[in-house]
Length: 624
Image (cartoon, rainbow, N blue to C red):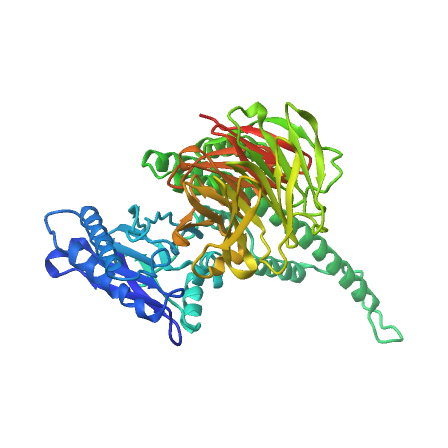
Protein backbone atom coordinates (compact mmCIF):
# COMPACT_ATOMS: atom_id res chain seq x y z
CA UNK A 1 0.00 0.00 0.00
CA UNK A 2 1.14 3.53 -0.77
CA UNK A 3 0.37 6.54 1.45
CA UNK A 4 0.83 10.16 0.46
CA UNK A 5 0.19 13.52 2.13
CA UNK A 6 -0.57 16.60 0.08
CA UNK A 7 -1.46 20.20 0.83
CA UNK A 8 -4.76 21.51 -0.54
CA UNK A 9 -4.55 25.29 -0.86
CA UNK A 10 -7.37 27.49 -2.15
CA UNK A 11 -7.28 30.93 -3.67
CA UNK A 12 -6.07 34.03 -1.87
CA UNK A 13 -4.63 34.41 1.63
CA UNK A 14 -5.58 31.93 4.35
CA UNK A 15 -5.57 31.96 8.14
CA UNK A 16 -4.36 28.34 8.04
CA UNK A 17 -0.73 27.27 7.61
CA UNK A 18 0.56 23.77 6.80
CA UNK A 19 4.01 22.20 7.21
CA UNK A 20 5.32 18.89 5.83
CA UNK A 21 8.57 17.09 6.76
CA UNK A 22 9.85 13.81 5.28
CA UNK A 23 12.06 11.35 7.14
CA UNK A 24 15.82 11.32 6.51
CA UNK A 25 17.00 8.39 4.38
CA UNK A 26 18.05 6.33 7.39
CA UNK A 27 14.64 6.80 9.05
CA UNK A 28 12.23 5.90 6.24
CA UNK A 29 10.22 3.69 8.61
CA UNK A 30 9.24 6.76 10.64
CA UNK A 31 7.27 8.25 7.73
CA UNK A 32 6.15 11.83 7.16
CA UNK A 33 5.17 14.59 9.60
CA UNK A 34 2.34 17.01 8.80
CA UNK A 35 1.37 20.04 10.90
CA UNK A 36 -1.69 22.22 10.33
CA UNK A 37 -2.19 25.44 12.33
CA UNK A 38 -5.30 27.63 12.16
CA UNK A 39 -5.03 31.25 13.37
CA UNK A 40 -8.48 32.53 12.40
CA UNK A 41 -9.18 33.84 15.94
CA UNK A 42 -5.66 35.10 16.65
CA UNK A 43 -3.60 38.13 15.60
CA UNK A 44 -0.89 38.00 12.95
CA UNK A 45 1.78 38.35 15.64
CA UNK A 46 1.34 34.76 16.90
CA UNK A 47 1.49 32.99 13.53
CA UNK A 48 5.11 32.10 14.24
CA UNK A 49 3.76 29.39 16.58
CA UNK A 50 2.96 27.15 13.61
CA UNK A 51 6.58 27.08 12.46
CA UNK A 52 7.73 26.71 16.08
CA UNK A 53 5.57 23.61 16.53
CA UNK A 54 6.63 22.10 13.21
CA UNK A 55 10.30 22.61 14.08
CA UNK A 56 9.98 21.20 17.61
CA UNK A 57 8.05 18.14 16.46
CA UNK A 58 10.39 17.39 13.55
CA UNK A 59 13.50 17.70 15.72
CA UNK A 60 12.16 15.42 18.49
CA UNK A 61 10.40 12.87 16.27
CA UNK A 62 13.38 12.05 14.06
CA UNK A 63 15.94 12.26 16.88
CA UNK A 64 15.70 8.65 18.16
CA UNK A 65 16.17 5.92 15.54
CA UNK A 66 16.28 2.98 17.98
CA UNK A 67 12.66 3.48 19.05
CA UNK A 68 9.34 3.20 17.19
CA UNK A 69 7.03 5.83 15.64
CA UNK A 70 4.59 5.77 18.55
CA UNK A 71 7.24 6.41 21.22
CA UNK A 72 8.92 9.08 19.12
CA UNK A 73 5.59 10.80 18.52
CA UNK A 74 4.86 10.94 22.25
CA UNK A 75 8.30 12.46 22.79
CA UNK A 76 7.61 15.01 20.05
CA UNK A 77 4.29 16.02 21.63
CA UNK A 78 6.00 16.49 24.99
CA UNK A 79 8.60 18.75 23.36
CA UNK A 80 5.85 20.72 21.61
CA UNK A 81 4.05 21.26 24.92
CA UNK A 82 7.33 22.32 26.55
CA UNK A 83 7.95 24.84 23.78
CA UNK A 84 4.47 26.34 24.20
CA UNK A 85 4.80 26.45 27.99
CA UNK A 86 8.07 28.34 27.60
CA UNK A 87 6.41 30.80 25.21
CA UNK A 88 3.60 31.35 27.72
CA UNK A 89 6.09 32.18 30.48
CA UNK A 90 7.98 34.74 28.41
CA UNK A 91 5.07 37.08 27.77
CA UNK A 92 1.30 37.57 27.44
CA UNK A 93 0.00 34.32 25.97
CA UNK A 94 -3.16 35.50 24.24
CA UNK A 95 -3.17 32.27 22.23
CA UNK A 96 -3.87 30.05 25.29
CA UNK A 97 -7.22 28.34 24.80
CA UNK A 98 -7.52 29.62 21.21
CA UNK A 99 -4.59 27.88 19.51
CA UNK A 100 -5.76 25.33 16.92
CA UNK A 101 -3.01 22.98 15.77
CA UNK A 102 -3.13 19.35 14.68
CA UNK A 103 -0.06 17.16 14.24
CA UNK A 104 -0.13 14.00 12.11
CA UNK A 105 2.42 11.32 11.30
CA UNK A 106 1.95 8.72 8.56
CA UNK A 107 4.37 5.81 8.94
CA UNK A 108 3.59 2.98 6.51
CA UNK A 109 -0.05 2.09 7.26
CA UNK A 110 -0.08 3.70 10.73
CA UNK A 111 -1.63 7.12 11.40
CA UNK A 112 -0.71 9.07 14.56
CA UNK A 113 -2.65 12.21 15.50
CA UNK A 114 -2.82 14.81 18.26
CA UNK A 115 -4.67 18.12 18.39
CA UNK A 116 -5.09 21.16 20.60
CA UNK A 117 -8.80 21.28 19.72
CA UNK A 118 -10.67 23.13 17.00
CA UNK A 119 -9.06 21.03 14.25
CA UNK A 120 -10.49 17.76 12.97
CA UNK A 121 -9.49 14.74 10.92
CA UNK A 122 -12.26 13.21 8.78
CA UNK A 123 -11.83 9.68 7.45
CA UNK A 124 -13.58 8.71 4.19
CA UNK A 125 -13.75 4.92 4.00
CA UNK A 126 -16.17 2.72 2.12
CA UNK A 127 -18.52 5.56 1.23
CA UNK A 128 -18.86 6.69 4.86
CA UNK A 129 -17.21 9.61 6.66
CA UNK A 130 -16.02 9.34 10.28
CA UNK A 131 -14.80 12.11 12.58
CA UNK A 132 -11.60 10.62 14.06
CA UNK A 133 -11.76 11.13 17.87
CA UNK A 134 -9.13 13.54 19.20
CA UNK A 135 -8.54 14.67 22.79
CA UNK A 136 -6.96 18.05 23.50
CA UNK A 137 -4.92 19.05 26.53
CA UNK A 138 -5.28 22.18 28.66
CA UNK A 139 -3.79 25.65 28.99
CA UNK A 140 -0.24 26.14 27.73
CA UNK A 141 0.19 22.34 27.30
CA UNK A 142 -2.60 21.85 24.77
CA UNK A 143 -1.52 18.60 23.11
CA UNK A 144 -3.44 15.87 24.89
CA UNK A 145 -3.87 12.18 24.21
CA UNK A 146 -2.41 10.38 21.21
CA UNK A 147 -4.82 8.88 18.64
CA UNK A 148 -3.56 5.86 16.68
CA UNK A 149 -5.24 4.42 13.59
CA UNK A 150 -4.57 1.88 10.87
CA UNK A 151 -4.94 2.99 7.25
CA UNK A 152 -6.60 0.77 4.67
CA UNK A 153 -6.36 0.80 0.90
CA UNK A 154 -8.76 3.40 -0.47
CA UNK A 155 -8.81 5.57 2.67
CA UNK A 156 -8.82 9.34 2.31
CA UNK A 157 -8.37 11.67 5.28
CA UNK A 158 -8.83 15.43 5.36
CA UNK A 159 -7.24 17.44 8.19
CA UNK A 160 -8.45 21.01 8.66
CA UNK A 161 -9.99 23.57 10.99
CA UNK A 162 -13.47 22.45 12.03
CA UNK A 163 -15.02 25.79 11.08
CA UNK A 164 -13.72 25.50 7.51
CA UNK A 165 -15.06 21.97 7.05
CA UNK A 166 -18.46 22.94 8.47
CA UNK A 167 -18.59 25.83 6.00
CA UNK A 168 -18.07 23.42 3.10
CA UNK A 169 -20.46 20.71 4.42
CA UNK A 170 -17.52 18.31 4.49
CA UNK A 171 -19.30 15.25 5.92
CA UNK A 172 -21.81 15.03 3.07
CA UNK A 173 -19.57 16.25 0.24
CA UNK A 174 -16.63 14.01 1.18
CA UNK A 175 -18.88 10.95 1.37
CA UNK A 176 -20.50 11.73 -1.99
CA UNK A 177 -17.37 12.45 -4.06
CA UNK A 178 -13.93 13.06 -2.47
CA UNK A 179 -12.37 14.20 -5.75
CA UNK A 180 -15.04 16.82 -6.33
CA UNK A 181 -14.82 17.94 -2.68
CA UNK A 182 -11.06 18.57 -2.87
CA UNK A 183 -11.40 20.25 -6.26
CA UNK A 184 -13.99 22.61 -4.77
CA UNK A 185 -11.61 23.44 -1.89
CA UNK A 186 -8.90 24.40 -4.37
CA UNK A 187 -11.30 26.84 -6.03
CA UNK A 188 -12.48 28.36 -2.73
CA UNK A 189 -11.16 31.53 -1.14
CA UNK A 190 -8.88 31.28 1.89
CA UNK A 191 -9.02 27.48 2.31
CA UNK A 192 -6.12 25.26 3.33
CA UNK A 193 -6.05 21.66 4.54
CA UNK A 194 -4.07 18.42 4.40
CA UNK A 195 -5.12 15.33 2.47
CA UNK A 196 -3.87 11.81 3.22
CA UNK A 197 -4.41 9.12 0.57
CA UNK A 198 -3.87 5.38 0.97
CA UNK A 199 -3.76 3.66 -2.43
CA UNK A 200 -2.56 0.43 -3.98
CA UNK A 201 1.20 0.35 -4.49
CA UNK A 202 0.76 -0.74 -8.13
CA UNK A 203 -1.67 2.08 -8.85
CA UNK A 204 -0.37 5.58 -8.08
CA UNK A 205 -3.83 7.08 -8.46
CA UNK A 206 -5.91 7.15 -5.25
CA UNK A 207 -9.21 5.35 -5.40
CA UNK A 208 -12.23 5.14 -3.12
CA UNK A 209 -13.57 1.68 -2.21
CA UNK A 210 -17.31 1.14 -2.32
CA UNK A 211 -19.21 -0.59 0.52
CA UNK A 212 -18.92 -4.36 0.38
CA UNK A 213 -22.60 -4.93 -0.34
CA UNK A 214 -22.71 -2.78 -3.51
CA UNK A 215 -20.44 -5.00 -5.67
CA UNK A 216 -22.42 -8.05 -4.55
CA UNK A 217 -25.69 -6.45 -5.57
CA UNK A 218 -24.23 -5.39 -8.92
CA UNK A 219 -22.89 -8.89 -9.54
CA UNK A 220 -26.26 -10.42 -8.76
CA UNK A 221 -27.97 -8.14 -11.28
CA UNK A 222 -25.33 -8.94 -13.89
CA UNK A 223 -26.02 -12.65 -13.50
CA UNK A 224 -29.81 -12.57 -13.74
CA UNK A 225 -31.00 -9.04 -14.59
CA UNK A 226 -32.04 -7.94 -18.07
CA UNK A 227 -31.07 -4.43 -19.15
CA UNK A 228 -33.65 -2.30 -20.91
CA UNK A 229 -31.69 -2.36 -24.18
CA UNK A 230 -31.81 -6.17 -24.25
CA UNK A 231 -35.54 -6.11 -23.55
CA UNK A 232 -36.10 -3.75 -26.49
CA UNK A 233 -34.05 -5.98 -28.78
CA UNK A 234 -36.16 -8.98 -27.86
CA UNK A 235 -39.33 -6.95 -28.43
CA UNK A 236 -38.23 -6.02 -31.94
CA UNK A 237 -37.41 -9.65 -32.68
CA UNK A 238 -40.88 -10.73 -31.60
CA UNK A 239 -42.43 -8.04 -33.81
CA UNK A 240 -40.59 -9.29 -36.89
CA UNK A 241 -41.59 -12.89 -36.22
CA UNK A 242 -45.36 -12.21 -36.31
CA UNK A 243 -46.80 -13.66 -39.56
CA UNK A 244 -50.15 -12.62 -40.96
CA UNK A 245 -52.71 -15.34 -41.70
CA UNK A 246 -53.18 -16.08 -45.38
CA UNK A 247 -56.91 -15.33 -45.34
CA UNK A 248 -56.21 -11.69 -44.48
CA UNK A 249 -56.03 -10.84 -48.19
CA UNK A 250 -55.45 -7.14 -48.79
CA UNK A 251 -58.64 -5.40 -49.92
CA UNK A 252 -58.23 -1.89 -51.22
CA UNK A 253 -60.59 0.50 -49.44
CA UNK A 254 -61.80 3.81 -50.62
CA UNK A 255 -59.50 5.75 -48.25
CA UNK A 256 -56.42 3.89 -49.43
CA UNK A 257 -55.84 1.88 -46.22
CA UNK A 258 -55.61 -1.88 -46.08
CA UNK A 259 -57.94 -2.87 -43.23
CA UNK A 260 -56.68 -6.44 -42.67
CA UNK A 261 -53.14 -5.18 -42.32
CA UNK A 262 -54.35 -2.48 -39.93
CA UNK A 263 -56.12 -5.07 -37.77
CA UNK A 264 -53.09 -7.34 -37.87
CA UNK A 265 -50.83 -4.45 -36.92
CA UNK A 266 -52.98 -3.52 -33.92
CA UNK A 267 -53.03 -7.15 -32.76
CA UNK A 268 -49.26 -7.39 -33.16
CA UNK A 269 -48.59 -4.18 -31.25
CA UNK A 270 -50.94 -5.18 -28.43
CA UNK A 271 -49.40 -8.62 -28.14
CA UNK A 272 -45.88 -7.22 -28.07
CA UNK A 273 -46.91 -4.66 -25.43
CA UNK A 274 -48.47 -7.33 -23.20
CA UNK A 275 -45.46 -9.61 -23.57
CA UNK A 276 -43.08 -6.71 -22.86
CA UNK A 277 -45.09 -5.66 -19.76
CA UNK A 278 -45.08 -9.20 -18.37
CA UNK A 279 -41.38 -9.52 -19.13
CA UNK A 280 -40.56 -6.15 -17.53
CA UNK A 281 -42.58 -7.02 -14.45
CA UNK A 282 -40.75 -10.29 -14.14
CA UNK A 283 -37.45 -8.51 -14.57
CA UNK A 284 -38.33 -6.01 -11.83
CA UNK A 285 -39.31 -8.79 -9.44
CA UNK A 286 -36.06 -10.55 -10.24
CA UNK A 287 -34.13 -7.37 -9.54
CA UNK A 288 -35.97 -6.84 -6.23
CA UNK A 289 -35.25 -10.41 -5.24
CA UNK A 290 -31.59 -10.05 -6.12
CA UNK A 291 -31.29 -6.79 -4.19
CA UNK A 292 -33.04 -8.33 -1.19
CA UNK A 293 -30.71 -11.34 -1.27
CA UNK A 294 -27.69 -9.06 -1.66
CA UNK A 295 -28.87 -6.90 1.26
CA UNK A 296 -29.33 -9.91 3.54
CA UNK A 297 -25.94 -11.24 2.49
CA UNK A 298 -24.34 -7.85 3.21
CA UNK A 299 -25.98 -7.70 6.65
CA UNK A 300 -24.64 -11.16 7.51
CA UNK A 301 -21.22 -10.03 6.35
CA UNK A 302 -21.52 -6.91 8.55
CA UNK A 303 -22.27 -9.11 11.55
CA UNK A 304 -19.16 -11.21 10.95
CA UNK A 305 -16.97 -8.20 10.17
CA UNK A 306 -18.06 -6.38 13.34
CA UNK A 307 -17.10 -9.43 15.43
CA UNK A 308 -13.60 -9.32 13.95
CA UNK A 309 -13.31 -5.57 14.59
CA UNK A 310 -14.37 -6.03 18.22
CA UNK A 311 -11.69 -8.69 18.67
CA UNK A 312 -9.14 -6.23 17.26
CA UNK A 313 -10.34 -3.61 19.77
CA UNK A 314 -11.84 -1.19 17.23
CA UNK A 315 -15.27 -0.63 18.79
CA UNK A 316 -16.04 2.52 16.82
CA UNK A 317 -15.37 0.80 13.51
CA UNK A 318 -17.52 -2.17 14.56
CA UNK A 319 -20.40 0.19 15.36
CA UNK A 320 -20.11 1.81 11.93
CA UNK A 321 -20.16 -1.63 10.30
CA UNK A 322 -23.26 -2.67 12.27
CA UNK A 323 -25.01 0.58 11.41
CA UNK A 324 -24.43 -0.04 7.69
CA UNK A 325 -25.88 -3.52 8.04
CA UNK A 326 -28.94 -2.16 9.86
CA UNK A 327 -29.49 0.52 7.21
CA UNK A 328 -29.27 -2.11 4.47
CA UNK A 329 -31.91 -4.32 6.10
CA UNK A 330 -34.35 -1.53 6.98
CA UNK A 331 -35.72 -1.62 3.41
CA UNK A 332 -36.36 -5.37 3.66
CA UNK A 333 -37.86 -5.42 7.16
CA UNK A 334 -40.96 -7.36 6.04
CA UNK A 335 -38.90 -10.21 4.62
CA UNK A 336 -39.00 -13.34 6.77
CA UNK A 337 -35.24 -13.84 6.82
CA UNK A 338 -34.40 -10.14 7.19
CA UNK A 339 -36.51 -9.47 10.29
CA UNK A 340 -34.67 -11.73 12.82
CA UNK A 341 -31.32 -10.72 11.32
CA UNK A 342 -32.23 -7.05 11.79
CA UNK A 343 -33.14 -7.72 15.43
CA UNK A 344 -29.79 -9.43 15.98
CA UNK A 345 -27.88 -6.52 14.43
CA UNK A 346 -29.76 -3.98 16.56
CA UNK A 347 -29.19 -6.02 19.73
CA UNK A 348 -25.48 -6.34 18.93
CA UNK A 349 -25.20 -2.61 18.27
CA UNK A 350 -26.98 -1.70 21.51
CA UNK A 351 -24.77 -4.02 23.53
CA UNK A 352 -21.60 -2.70 21.92
CA UNK A 353 -22.74 0.92 22.35
CA UNK A 354 -23.57 0.20 26.01
CA UNK A 355 -27.17 1.15 25.31
CA UNK A 356 -29.30 0.24 28.32
CA UNK A 357 -32.89 1.15 29.23
CA UNK A 358 -32.95 4.08 31.63
CA UNK A 359 -34.43 3.45 35.07
CA UNK A 360 -36.96 6.28 35.48
CA UNK A 361 -39.69 7.39 37.87
CA UNK A 362 -42.09 10.32 37.67
CA UNK A 363 -40.76 12.88 40.14
CA UNK A 364 -43.47 15.48 39.45
CA UNK A 365 -46.47 14.98 37.17
CA UNK A 366 -47.04 18.19 35.19
CA UNK A 367 -50.01 17.12 33.09
CA UNK A 368 -52.47 19.97 33.02
CA UNK A 369 -49.77 22.42 34.08
CA UNK A 370 -51.14 25.94 33.44
CA UNK A 371 -47.97 27.22 31.71
CA UNK A 372 -46.45 26.02 28.42
CA UNK A 373 -43.35 23.91 29.09
CA UNK A 374 -41.73 24.27 25.68
CA UNK A 375 -38.40 26.01 26.31
CA UNK A 376 -38.87 25.91 30.10
CA UNK A 377 -35.93 25.52 32.50
CA UNK A 378 -35.57 24.00 35.96
CA UNK A 379 -33.17 24.49 38.88
CA UNK A 380 -32.76 22.68 42.19
CA UNK A 381 -31.58 24.04 45.52
CA UNK A 382 -28.85 21.93 47.09
CA UNK A 383 -29.68 19.99 50.25
CA UNK A 384 -28.04 17.10 52.02
CA UNK A 385 -31.10 14.90 51.52
CA UNK A 386 -32.75 14.46 48.13
CA UNK A 387 -36.23 14.17 49.65
CA UNK A 388 -35.87 17.79 50.79
CA UNK A 389 -34.89 18.98 47.33
CA UNK A 390 -36.67 22.15 46.19
CA UNK A 391 -37.36 22.43 42.47
CA UNK A 392 -38.04 25.70 40.64
CA UNK A 393 -39.49 25.87 37.13
CA UNK A 394 -39.36 28.95 34.87
CA UNK A 395 -41.43 29.30 31.70
CA UNK A 396 -40.60 31.72 28.85
CA UNK A 397 -44.30 32.52 28.50
CA UNK A 398 -45.04 34.08 31.95
CA UNK A 399 -43.28 36.21 34.58
CA UNK A 400 -43.90 33.58 37.23
CA UNK A 401 -41.80 31.00 39.04
CA UNK A 402 -43.21 27.63 40.13
CA UNK A 403 -41.58 26.16 43.26
CA UNK A 404 -42.14 22.72 44.72
CA UNK A 405 -40.79 21.15 47.89
CA UNK A 406 -41.58 17.45 48.21
CA UNK A 407 -42.11 17.65 51.98
CA UNK A 408 -43.55 21.09 52.65
CA UNK A 409 -45.78 21.56 49.64
CA UNK A 410 -46.81 18.63 47.47
CA UNK A 411 -48.51 20.54 44.65
CA UNK A 412 -46.09 23.45 44.36
CA UNK A 413 -46.81 27.16 44.40
CA UNK A 414 -46.58 30.03 41.91
CA UNK A 415 -44.66 33.20 42.69
CA UNK A 416 -45.67 36.01 40.32
CA UNK A 417 -42.77 38.40 39.88
CA UNK A 418 -43.54 42.11 40.35
CA UNK A 419 -42.56 44.95 37.98
CA UNK A 420 -40.30 45.38 36.12
CA UNK A 421 -41.17 41.79 35.12
CA UNK A 422 -43.89 41.66 32.44
CA UNK A 423 -42.46 39.01 30.09
CA UNK A 424 -41.63 35.34 30.55
CA UNK A 425 -38.45 34.17 32.27
CA UNK A 426 -35.46 33.26 30.12
CA UNK A 427 -33.03 31.83 32.69
CA UNK A 428 -32.95 30.37 36.20
CA UNK A 429 -30.29 29.04 38.58
CA UNK A 430 -29.84 28.17 42.25
CA UNK A 431 -27.03 29.29 44.55
CA UNK A 432 -26.21 27.34 47.67
CA UNK A 433 -24.41 29.82 49.91
CA UNK A 434 -26.77 31.40 50.89
CA UNK A 435 -29.66 29.38 49.34
CA UNK A 436 -31.43 31.44 46.66
CA UNK A 437 -33.06 30.96 43.30
CA UNK A 438 -32.01 33.57 40.73
CA UNK A 439 -34.46 34.23 37.89
CA UNK A 440 -34.21 36.76 35.08
CA UNK A 441 -35.36 38.01 31.71
CA UNK A 442 -34.28 41.03 29.59
CA UNK A 443 -36.31 43.32 31.88
CA UNK A 444 -35.08 42.37 35.33
CA UNK A 445 -33.49 39.98 37.81
CA UNK A 446 -34.93 38.53 41.01
CA UNK A 447 -33.79 36.46 43.98
CA UNK A 448 -36.14 34.03 45.77
CA UNK A 449 -35.68 32.16 49.06
CA UNK A 450 -36.55 28.49 48.32
CA UNK A 451 -37.23 27.55 51.96
CA UNK A 452 -39.63 30.47 52.47
CA UNK A 453 -40.97 30.56 48.89
CA UNK A 454 -40.58 34.34 49.04
CA UNK A 455 -39.36 36.93 46.53
CA UNK A 456 -36.53 38.79 48.27
CA UNK A 457 -35.51 41.21 45.52
CA UNK A 458 -36.67 42.17 42.02
CA UNK A 459 -34.88 44.96 40.17
CA UNK A 460 -34.59 46.33 36.66
CA UNK A 461 -31.81 45.37 34.22
CA UNK A 462 -32.56 48.08 31.67
CA UNK A 463 -30.13 48.06 28.75
CA UNK A 464 -28.25 45.04 30.07
CA UNK A 465 -27.40 41.97 28.03
CA UNK A 466 -30.10 39.35 27.54
CA UNK A 467 -29.14 36.16 29.40
CA UNK A 468 -30.30 32.82 27.93
CA UNK A 469 -28.84 30.25 30.32
CA UNK A 470 -27.40 30.25 33.86
CA UNK A 471 -25.33 28.05 36.14
CA UNK A 472 -23.86 28.65 39.58
CA UNK A 473 -21.11 27.79 42.02
CA UNK A 474 -21.14 29.00 45.63
CA UNK A 475 -22.75 32.44 45.62
CA UNK A 476 -21.85 33.24 41.99
CA UNK A 477 -24.06 32.73 38.95
CA UNK A 478 -22.56 32.62 35.45
CA UNK A 479 -24.79 33.60 32.53
CA UNK A 480 -24.34 33.49 28.74
CA UNK A 481 -25.14 36.74 26.91
CA UNK A 482 -25.33 35.72 23.21
CA UNK A 483 -25.93 39.19 21.80
CA UNK A 484 -22.66 40.54 23.21
CA UNK A 485 -20.81 37.21 22.83
CA UNK A 486 -19.74 37.16 26.46
CA UNK A 487 -20.27 35.63 29.90
CA UNK A 488 -21.59 37.70 32.80
CA UNK A 489 -21.21 36.83 36.50
CA UNK A 490 -23.76 37.71 39.21
CA UNK A 491 -22.69 37.67 42.87
CA UNK A 492 -25.51 37.07 45.37
CA UNK A 493 -25.03 38.49 48.88
CA UNK A 494 -26.59 37.17 52.08
CA UNK A 495 -29.54 39.59 51.88
CA UNK A 496 -30.38 38.60 48.29
CA UNK A 497 -28.83 41.66 46.64
CA UNK A 498 -27.01 41.09 43.36
CA UNK A 499 -23.90 42.60 41.81
CA UNK A 500 -23.41 42.12 38.07
CA UNK A 501 -20.10 42.34 36.22
CA UNK A 502 -18.59 41.16 32.91
CA UNK A 503 -16.38 38.10 33.22
CA UNK A 504 -14.76 37.35 29.84
CA UNK A 505 -11.77 39.49 28.88
CA UNK A 506 -12.81 39.50 25.21
CA UNK A 507 -15.81 38.53 23.10
CA UNK A 508 -16.26 34.87 22.16
CA UNK A 509 -18.24 34.66 18.85
CA UNK A 510 -19.22 31.01 19.41
CA UNK A 511 -21.36 32.07 22.42
CA UNK A 512 -23.96 33.44 20.00
CA UNK A 513 -25.11 29.84 19.53
CA UNK A 514 -24.67 28.61 23.13
CA UNK A 515 -27.22 25.99 24.16
CA UNK A 516 -26.45 25.42 27.83
CA UNK A 517 -23.94 26.21 30.56
CA UNK A 518 -22.81 24.35 33.70
CA UNK A 519 -19.88 24.53 36.10
CA UNK A 520 -17.11 21.95 35.68
CA UNK A 521 -14.79 22.13 38.67
CA UNK A 522 -14.70 25.91 39.08
CA UNK A 523 -14.92 26.69 35.37
CA UNK A 524 -17.93 27.59 33.19
CA UNK A 525 -18.50 24.94 30.51
CA UNK A 526 -20.65 25.97 27.53
CA UNK A 527 -22.39 23.64 25.05
CA UNK A 528 -22.39 24.63 21.36
CA UNK A 529 -24.63 23.22 18.58
CA UNK A 530 -21.99 20.90 17.06
CA UNK A 531 -21.57 18.83 20.27
CA UNK A 532 -18.54 20.93 21.17
CA UNK A 533 -17.94 22.23 24.68
CA UNK A 534 -15.82 25.29 25.49
CA UNK A 535 -14.28 25.47 28.94
CA UNK A 536 -13.42 28.93 30.30
CA UNK A 537 -10.98 29.81 33.07
CA UNK A 538 -9.92 33.16 34.53
CA UNK A 539 -12.06 35.06 32.07
CA UNK A 540 -10.64 33.38 28.96
CA UNK A 541 -11.23 30.38 26.75
CA UNK A 542 -9.28 27.52 28.30
CA UNK A 543 -10.01 24.32 26.39
CA UNK A 544 -12.24 22.83 23.72
CA UNK A 545 -13.87 19.40 23.96
CA UNK A 546 -15.90 17.35 21.52
CA UNK A 547 -18.16 14.65 22.91
CA UNK A 548 -18.11 11.39 20.98
CA UNK A 549 -17.74 7.64 21.30
CA UNK A 550 -19.76 4.41 21.22
CA UNK A 551 -20.98 5.22 17.71
CA UNK A 552 -23.06 8.17 18.89
CA UNK A 553 -24.14 10.51 16.06
CA UNK A 554 -26.82 12.53 17.84
CA UNK A 555 -27.09 16.14 18.92
CA UNK A 556 -26.71 17.42 22.48
CA UNK A 557 -29.44 19.85 23.55
CA UNK A 558 -28.72 20.20 27.31
CA UNK A 559 -26.31 18.81 29.89
CA UNK A 560 -25.47 18.60 33.59
CA UNK A 561 -22.22 18.01 35.48
CA UNK A 562 -21.96 14.95 37.74
CA UNK A 563 -19.45 13.99 40.41
CA UNK A 564 -15.95 13.24 39.16
CA UNK A 565 -16.25 15.77 36.29
CA UNK A 566 -18.55 13.43 34.38
CA UNK A 567 -21.23 14.86 32.11
CA UNK A 568 -24.84 13.82 31.59
CA UNK A 569 -26.01 14.91 28.12
CA UNK A 570 -29.55 15.05 26.74
CA UNK A 571 -30.00 13.87 23.14
CA UNK A 572 -33.72 14.50 22.71
CA UNK A 573 -33.72 13.73 18.97
CA UNK A 574 -32.64 10.12 19.67
CA UNK A 575 -34.49 9.79 23.02
CA UNK A 576 -31.43 9.02 25.09
CA UNK A 577 -29.14 10.33 27.83
CA UNK A 578 -25.37 10.02 27.55
CA UNK A 579 -22.99 9.60 30.49
CA UNK A 580 -19.32 10.49 29.89
CA UNK A 581 -16.14 10.02 31.86
CA UNK A 582 -13.93 12.91 32.99
CA UNK A 583 -12.18 12.97 29.59
CA UNK A 584 -15.47 13.47 27.74
CA UNK A 585 -15.67 9.95 26.26
CA UNK A 586 -19.17 8.46 26.26
CA UNK A 587 -19.32 5.52 28.69
CA UNK A 588 -23.06 4.74 28.71
CA UNK A 589 -26.15 5.50 26.67
CA UNK A 590 -29.45 5.45 28.58
CA UNK A 591 -32.43 4.95 26.29
CA UNK A 592 -35.85 6.26 27.33
CA UNK A 593 -38.78 7.47 25.18
CA UNK A 594 -39.36 10.18 27.81
CA UNK A 595 -36.18 11.95 26.68
CA UNK A 596 -37.73 12.64 23.27
CA UNK A 597 -39.59 15.66 24.70
CA UNK A 598 -36.79 16.67 27.08
CA UNK A 599 -36.44 20.41 27.71
CA UNK A 600 -33.82 20.69 30.46
CA UNK A 601 -31.57 18.53 32.62
CA UNK A 602 -30.13 19.02 36.14
CA UNK A 603 -28.30 16.79 38.60
CA UNK A 604 -30.37 15.76 41.63
CA UNK A 605 -27.34 14.10 43.27
CA UNK A 606 -24.30 12.07 42.25
CA UNK A 607 -26.45 9.13 41.13
CA UNK A 608 -29.61 10.70 39.73
CA UNK A 609 -30.80 13.32 37.25
CA UNK A 610 -33.98 15.35 36.96
CA UNK A 611 -35.23 15.58 33.38
CA UNK A 612 -37.88 18.16 32.46
CA UNK A 613 -40.19 16.91 29.68
CA UNK A 614 -43.34 18.39 28.18
CA UNK A 615 -45.57 16.84 30.86
CA UNK A 616 -43.42 15.77 33.85
CA UNK A 617 -40.19 16.05 35.78
CA UNK A 618 -38.57 12.61 35.53
CA UNK A 619 -36.02 11.17 37.93
CA UNK A 620 -33.39 9.14 36.06
CA UNK A 621 -31.10 6.81 38.00
CA UNK A 622 -27.50 6.66 36.77
CA UNK A 623 -26.21 3.06 36.66
CA UNK A 624 -23.12 2.47 38.78
